[in-house]
Image 1: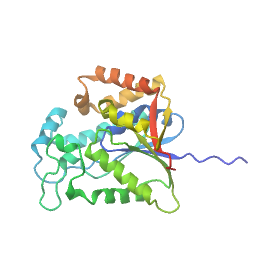
Image 2: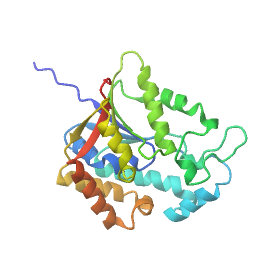
Image 3: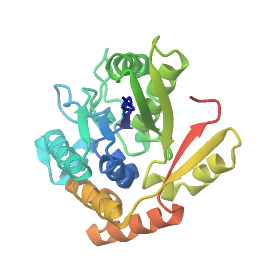
Image 4: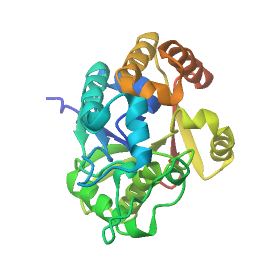
Length: 263
């Protein structure tokens, strides 16, 4: 009797409720339709803490046309997007950085657009460790983990990458985990020098995964499902579709990276 080969889970880590759809949607669809089990875990999907929102958060809600239901609406958009891709989903309880406050004085930690791009606030020193522990306790014992490169330097993307790398430095006994990285789209298009540096760095290796025409169509529809976020990057859906098509064709599919020393 031929022993059936175990299908390994692919877990894509998304800093926000759209990042994997934006960056990897075509590949996720291809894997789902090839019999794999892709799953999208959003790190910063929690409700805002009690208290008055910052003017910056209110301004974003106005742009998203979501009001106080912003997080609830974004989670619903993510569920619809995952359905398009054929992926399961998980929403972790950490709030988006625009909502986070200091544990002591309640200070809004990221009150401006500029504050989103840089290192974690000093009052969040323990957040990387806590997230790493959460992932260690939650990930399947056998899994391919796909994390953001944090191209562009968004603080929540940095948080996600740092927690994963901490986890892989000292993984629990008995696990079979493999780590890949994806380029954060559309930041990758705006920070081409960062991406070029990684491409030229001999400590990295990469693989291009083909994305078919049907996969590209699903990728575009999955991004469109995040309706509140389209205006963040594009004038309209047509511009999104054109730019996403150009991005996919530029690489001939979707490129993932890993360290040469990584499992």
